[in-house]
Image (cartoon, rainbow, N blue to C red; front, side):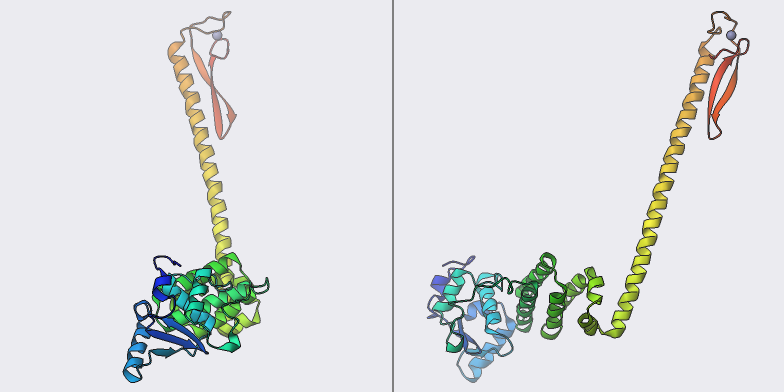
Length: 306
Ligand SMILES: [Zn+2]
């Protein structure tokens, strides 16, 4: 089996070459220091002390669920952790089986028979919270790339399947579980996009406190007033622009009109009226509107338009 650049079949197939174990609620992950410690300085330090003290090579993970640990292990070996509401990729599930991932019979159905998610399971709630839990374990063990990936997946989950209550649950989880400031920033950004809906939910108000809620409501009012003002200014600007364009076009027409008059005066020797044919002397007649006069040359003798 192959994951990305790694041939896990050779590397971890039976766990025979494993030199380190992660144990979580009875689940045992036979892993390799070269894979784990190069990506997690915290686990590297931990295994160093474990060896110094007991030479067991076992690290107990107490603060997280086995499902979260399995996703972390999957990431350490493959660079991804798939979709946490769905089973591991077949190849990785096989790896988990072959490395005696499960030794606790009480949860023996996992991962061999990882339950297929029902439509109820595949909710934004579950999805967002799972990414938060993975982000928390990444933050705890300082696995930077996993922190980044879980943040990115969390954001995608928010944007593809927004659900207000689920987001609040995930936010609550993130603030309690993960110290990753960058995740908190992602959450704040997504919250700002949906702030109107969020403020209607009491649980969200509980998260940010009553004073925070008041400040936010006032920020929203101000932002709306500013936005209204911007729309008004933009409308006024467009009106002014149209007026200016019309004035310029008018000026062009007047100049063209005067130009034609001057040209006629230069070229014409006699009145164009055949019954007049006087030597050409003319006057300018002004017609049109006050804002756009129309000048016409007329023969001084017969008043014919020239
Ligand atoms: Zn004439």
